[in-house]
Length: 226
Ligand code: CTP
Ligand code: CA
Image (cartoon, rainbow, N blue to C red; front, side, top):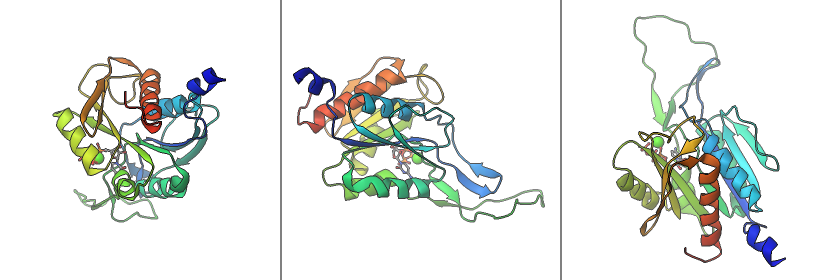
């Protein structure tokens, strides 16, 4: 029995994972999105499930098969993702924001397909709500894990985001590195907390990275700081 508890350190905990890239509609057939495949978030959801948690996976624009045993909510936009996180928030123990959320959305969404007209076209964009920052401000006992994909000054931006969004852990990847980034099955990440670097993981599968992130979260949640 002792062993069982140690192997399922997130038993009784609710983990909410956001994954994929949001879709911001321009008209019924066009949208703005990004290259996120959702693989990192799905790997985290799978790991959390293996560690015993009740997992809600909020997924935007992914083509992946959901891990078994996980409740999946599929949606498109940042606004819908915000609403979905809000609906789960009260009894959330760990929120993992691995989704790539569009920073801006079209100001107007056309109900009809936009017709071609002049030689140039301007699309006005407005800022989306920052989901992680909002819940970072609201957090009481929830454990927040943020992500950052950077191309330069990784540690500097990671620590800035961690503090600005009140995260407990921030997972940063340098997407210029071979084996890291969008669409592939591997990743190279560094994990930070409020004191700085916790650990830099070598190149490994997103499944392994996901498991390590959730193990760290479980340890931190139980009060251990390893
Ligand atoms: N994030 C979010 N809501 C947004 C934008 C970002 O919840 N509207 C979250 C992401 O899910 C991620 C973290 O914030 O966990 C960092 O996202 P990132 O795009 O790297 O940070 P930004 O603050 O948007 O900064 P920038 O894109 O300018 O680097
Ligand atoms: Ca951004």
